[in-house]
Image 1 (cartoon, rainbow, N blue to C red):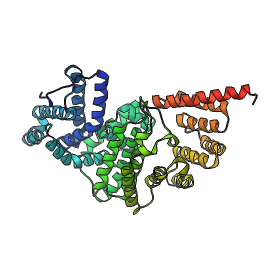
Image 2 (image 1 turned 120 degrees about the vertical axis):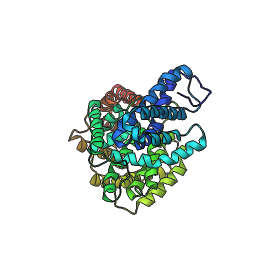
Image 3 (image 1 turned 90 degrees about the vertical axis):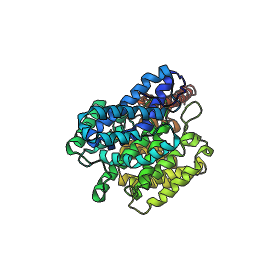
Image 4 (image 1 turned 180 degrees about the vertical axis):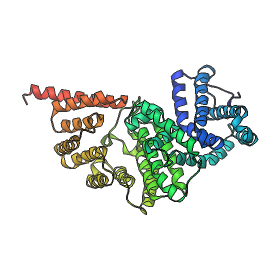
Length: 440
């Protein structure tokens, strides 16, 4: 197998693992899309296996021989070689073998011009794979799981976190989705007319989940996975620029992404510790990205009001406020009230309670939480306990605050978030001890 990049750099194994994870996010969707276009959608699993094998070879090879100068090109070349081997070996490709080999041979080397041309060619392939994964014959939960897995490089564990279910359940959904594509020979195409409308919402929801996982990771060392946010912005922009996806709700979702992505660099300090909105340095927010978000929000105004419009409006209130004290909480609370009508959920109610507390005080926020806690759906959701603990801390209920924050800490699996919660909990415990000593 030929390798791309003659000068390799030896790196620690931990760095290599992080690099390959980053490349998996960025490159796997591209490669799987192109291979699916070549092999046919009924052989989606084969395309996934080729890309997975290329990544495994990187993990096995790079710790010993060093990281290539162009790791992405190395992966592309390796996937190309593996695909060529399969095309030459498998009987099912005999009739198409010359055409497939000719196409594969045109894949780029490490030349920047070739890579740029390749990027242009695969744009439609990625959109085709998006809509293939979100075909109405596939159950919706399986649609989104498959798209997150194939297009976005999500691991099964991460998808399980996003759906609040088990890894075994996600594996079953993935198997079921691939079977439906194979059995029904679902075409690898961008649909038109009514077929487009019914699949677009699933595509948008998939991108929404992708961005959320990047903006606030479900587990691991870091709060933010910038590569996931960048990928979801890129895919949403690709969709919005295409006639098939150029709809108001697509622009609303892209605006939401851009408003939030503009704040990414200010969400943690140099040590990776969480910074709340009131603590962030707003001079670090990306004003060009905010301007793009406003443009897409304006384009979204031509359509019906959706949850994406309302969430983008909330994000705009934060992005446009010159400082925390100038935040338009009245507007934000009004938008949350509308969001509860359009798409009611306990998570929306939790965020609404935060707006209530900002406007009317911590006790009002606690009252809003009591209404939410009645159904018990967020009993094991760490942010419910974290928000309650912070409200209690602000209300001077230090013992209760320490208890709530301790419970939030028990339920959280994100290291940076745990460090933040532990800091708040210790603050509540110190305040509690001080109150006891003063006889309060």
